[in-house]
Image 1 (spheres, helix red, strand yellow):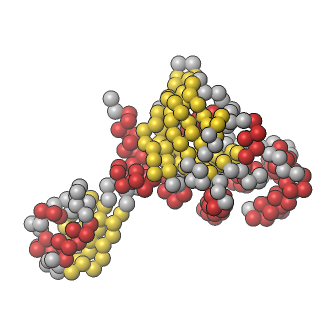
Image 2 (spheres, one colour):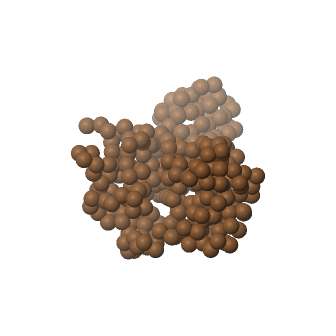
Image 3 (cartoon, one colour):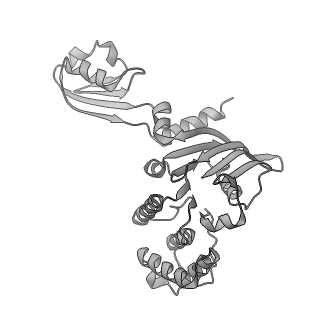
Length: 299
């Protein structure tokens, strides 16, 4: 769907994006991640043709972006850009028509979204009269009203309460089911884990982690196991296979030893005591994120 090849962008003496390459598979939810100043927003602005790359290529469906292609793209920027003096409904209808909708369809789609986001009572209010959370909902509606095939969301959950975050995730899932491709940029790692199939982590404009989220968690994270049991814990104290696990009362807890499978550990434990419960905790993306950014920053 979208390919970046060796894309670079400089601002004076600062390199904001440095020879960046990645592919966004069609029909996926792709996480573009990084700390503040990593180059995420600059990358998005180049995809949207707001900025021109100094070098490199950006391809959409196998070719360079054409002007007409942007009618198929939805974009929610991190900074709000709504017309503050315009009324809510007329704003959405106007921006929907700019994306190629007829006046009738734009009005119909607007009414449906206002109802779904519980904004119908605000239809004739000026944008400036809305709360920050409601303005964020409006920006999201504007980005999807034309059923884009590529949707770019930069910090979409900013200012939203948990109920409305859940609604956004529901709609993002519906768009994916329709075949849309979604690029999702955020600092909220727990949202990335729930939504994204593929990720690219950048820092100082460079790619430092890229690929399938499940495979990345398997490769870069450490699993933590907790095993609860009944029996004489002394029988477990000298087992070499459990040397990385902490033995307290009637439980074993710790990082899984490298090269040892959970089944092997359980069999070893059950040869001596009765296992009553076990839990394997996956590594969090947040910790992998922190570790990789720290590692990349070391000389």
